[in-house]
Length: 129
Length: 115
Image 1 (cartoon, each protein chain N blue to C red):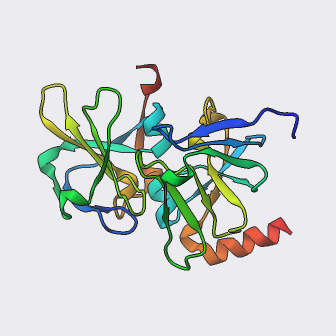
Image 2 (image 1 turned 60 degrees about the vertical axis):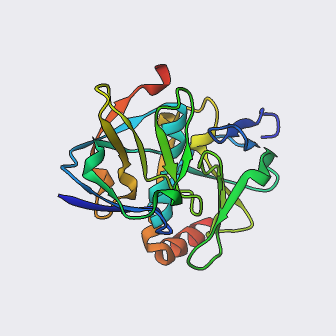
Image 3 (image 1 turned 135 degrees about the vertical axis):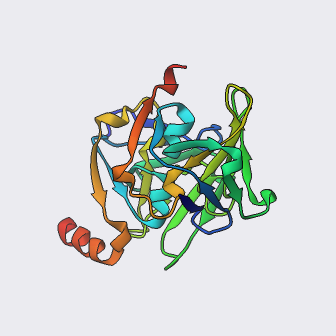
C-alpha cells in the first residue's frame, strides 16, 4: 500500500526514529524469555517497508541462544524499537509500541508461543507457505 | 512471598518481598513503549543483587524517577523513586519476575497519557 503515508516511530528519547509502511491491524505477542520481559508487540517488515531515519549509531545489539536474531535497543532510554527476528532474520520485527498515535487497543493480538520456539516456529512456517 | 527478578542476560538481578496483588498498566509514552506492568513496593522490600553501577538509567520530564534498564540486553526490570509522602519506592516490572503468570494478574489501567 504505497499510497498510504508511513507510520512514524521512535524510541522514548527520540534519538532512534523510523518509518514503517504498513497497514497496522494486528501485532504478535511472544512469550519467550526476552519478549515477555520487553512486552513488545511485533509487526513484520522488510528492508523496504522499514526505514531507519535516525539514530542507528545509538542502538545496542543483544543476541543470545542461537545468535540468529538481532535485538536492538536505544542505549539512552532502553526502548527496543525493532529486531531481526529468529523466525526470519532477513526481515524486521517492529515494536508497535513505538508507533506514534497508534491505539494499541485497536490491534488484534496474535500470540506466539516463543517459550516453545521450535514447535511454534514449525507451525508458523507451515502456515506461511 | 519472595520473588526473584532479572533482566534477560542476568546482569541485573534482584529479590523483592511482598504480596503481588495487582499491577499498573500505564499508557504514557514511556510506560507504553516499555510494556511496563508495574508493582509499586517500598524500596526496602527490594534487594538489588548486582552492583548499582551495572544499571543504566533513564530519566525524563521532572527527572524524579530513575528508570533503570540493562545496558547489555535492554530489559527494564525496575525503577526507583519516591511516593507522595517522600518514602523511597521501587517500581518493579513484573514481566521480569520469575514464576508470575502475567495472564492471571489484575491490571489496573492508568491514563498517564492524559497527565
